[in-house]
Image (cartoon, rainbow, N blue to C red):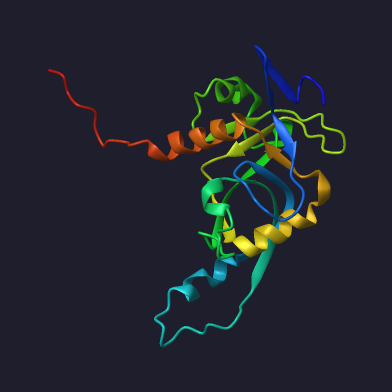
Length: 192
């Protein structure tokens, strides 16, 4: 571990990242190169047909690959005493290496200072075998995938899957909440 990975405040150490082996998930887990199936644009109107007309057979899809961050709260991803989970799907947001992101360099500092609520930065990892450059998470682009599928993706990442440590995962959670709790009014209150 380097100082990039371990933040010291007083006598307390806060690792930015932990290694997360296996298939169990937590908020802040970071997954790479995940295949996701999406319907073809020309077939979207077919989904809106009434049930008596609609054909529920599989139709054309395209496969896209995403780097994803788990946004669903850990308490919802924990296995209950009965062996089941509280949720059937996992909420995820895509992330990119900062230099390859859709966000222009002129806006990186604004993201870092929290002035662009849609985006959140993930720090660099220097953990041996799990290196990662600075990433930007797009909190406005959400994917919901079956829990069992995301667990399989996590398991396939191997022993070197990154997981945000505390308080960094809570910082991501707070950024997500701030983005979605915004209320835009059609008009500001006139003070005259």
